[in-house]
Image 1 (cartoon, one colour):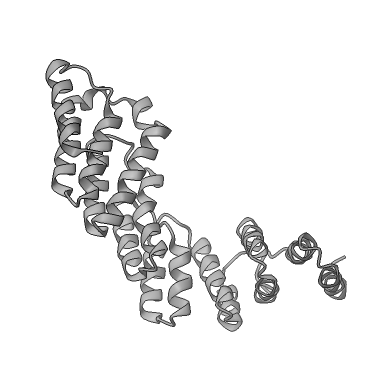
Image 2 (cartoon, helix red, strand yellow):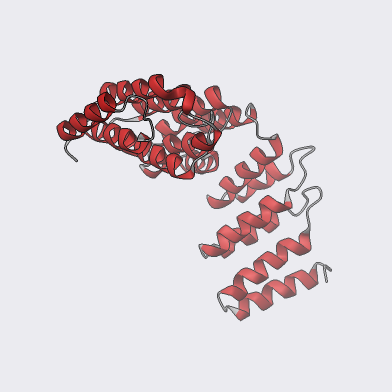
Length: 272
C-alpha cells in the first residue's frame, strides 16, 4: 500500500530482469494506488509504459484471462470512485489500446455506466451510455436508465436514451420490450400497452419470462399482472405462459389464494 516502496521494487525488477514481464498484477496494483490518490496521469503512464515494453508477449490466453479482467475491473471501479467518469473512460480506452484485454470486453465496458447507476447519477449514466455506444457499439444498463427517466417523467432524456439504443447492436424489439418494462415498473400501464401495440412488434417470450422472474423475486406481483394486461394483444404472445408466470410467482411465496385467483383468471380466458 506504499507507493514509494512499490515504485522502488518495480524499478529494481525492471532493471534486473528487463525481459521478464509476468508481473502485470503488480503493475495494476500500483496503478490502483495511483488512482486512489487521484494520480490519473501517473497510472496511465505506468500502464502504457508496461504495455510498450511487453505488448508483443500479450497473447490471447493473457488477454482472455478471467483473473486479469477482474483486476482491471477493480482498477476501473476505483477510478470511478476516486477520479470520476471522464478519467475512467480514458483509462478504459487505454486498456484496450495497450492490448491488456480484448477490445470491447463487455465486463469492463459496463463498469462506468453501472457505477453511475449505483450512485444514482443518471445524467452521468446517460453520458457513459453514449460513450459506450460511440466507441464499442454496446449499451449496458439501458433498462435501468429507461426506468429512471420514466420515473422522473423526463421525456427528453428518455427519448435520447431510446434513440441511442435504437442505433446500437440491439434489435429494436429488445429495446421496445425494455421500454415497456420501464413503464410497467413505474405503474404506467397505459403507456406500456401503447408500446406493446407498436405495429410489427412481436413478443420475445424469453425476455418476458425473464422479466417476470425478476419481478417475482422482488415480490412485484401486481407488475406481473400489469405486464399480462399490457401484452394481451401483443403479436405472438403466449398468454398461457404469461399467466403461468403469475401463478408460479404466487405459489413460490405460498400465497395459495392469489395463485388460485390467477388460475381461475386463466380458465376464464379459456387458456386451459
